[in-house]
Image (cartoon, rainbow, N blue to C red):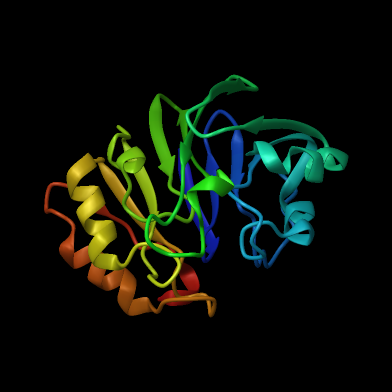
Length: 208
């Protein structure tokens, strides 16, 4: 399984399927995406022009239920509510609520999502834009990609606390260093605070 981050929270995970999460600021147009996941409709997560660069032939779009009609013209769509599960082109998918309990940016009632997908036998949790929540703390995964840029999401300290609680094998910080929010220092701080038994990789290229 190969995991790359183009920028910010734009993630590509390639296993038995090529999956993109929130394509954004793509420098090239690989057009190899088989399953495109969208966590919510903010501009840095739902970018139609970047989706077009990422999507391959006959892609499936997995989106929050309220976005299903918005992306229907792009191809096959699976709309999910928090807590729902589905099998999408052979990939097991779990929708996890993503929200700010005490900030206005991502209200719980909007039903924004993170996703746990199983690829190559590994459970990969892409948190989406969230703070530490009971739903996030309940996830069991092998790999987590979590936001660390603060302001709209977890701070590096909070994200490290989440990782130390759920104990993935690998933790990858996202949502920083792109000019939208956060800096390269956020990734370094996260790396320093995650417990030694958890491997951390810094993959946000434009923050290095």
